[in-house]
Length: 365
Image (cartoon, rainbow, N blue to C red; front, top):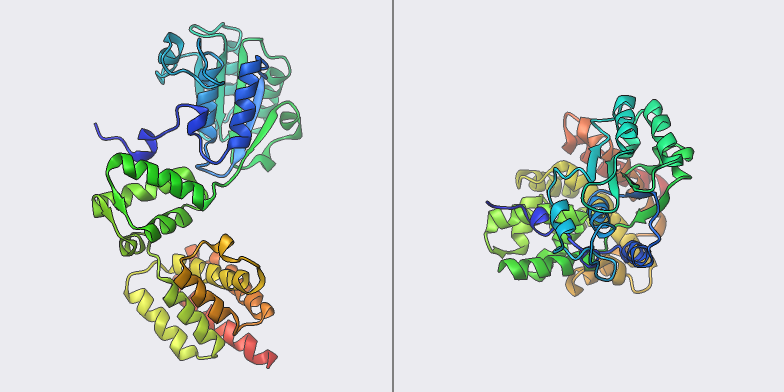
């Protein structure tokens, strides 16, 4: 049976978790030293490895022959815990099991000893979705847990958790994964799958993933289905609805020249090419941000990660804008992003933003 890339290449050991060395090293050291806590909090953006790390940790603390703190994946306990129905590792989605009754059910079951390993692990995903009464019920268990119980709470919105819960957990913040790390990961996977991909296409995929390993693999999945095993840069643009740098820079240049007609003509062509206007709006904001970085930062391309040709284009155009102009234009396009999903005509919002950029600039002159 075919497996999606993000499932096929889900990490099985701490070494396979990408971009979170500060967390995996700490957890591995705890296991090697036999210093297992009773409650952990994993927080960070989607697709950064929270649930995968929780599952690896659950197997590692029960593994009969851990290797450098990671599960061996071969012993009887590791094999038993691979089964999703195993009662020693219980995964709970708090988004759909957020009532106090579900947490009370946990409180009743934690008294039972694990069947296979030394610890029984409860992984509560999206824990911020619990109701206030459910949090209160969970708090009692976190205060006085049995020695054989480990809780791992995972959330993308840690600010919604009560301070009483936070104070009883060992907190780990998962960082967004850098483009370079994502590209390296994708190259390794494509090499194993026999997939060819252009260098600029790798960078586009990584940028579109916005620091999420899972999002990157989901995008790659679509591209493999579209291109089979030979991915071109233009294919990535077609699938993602991205427009090339030249088009965005041309719109920015038209704004600089105060040429409303030219800017709207280019935007109209972008729409006719079938580009998603929400993506275009976001990318124009990013384009002005990139121009600001190119204008103000030393070694700006270390941050931008462009090809030499694209970077030179940004360097040339940024000289025509003042820092204040770039900042104001960023604000104008950022302001419409939240309105795009509700707009009857997203294109009209972008047109209005373009005209506002030019009009505001004219008022200053």
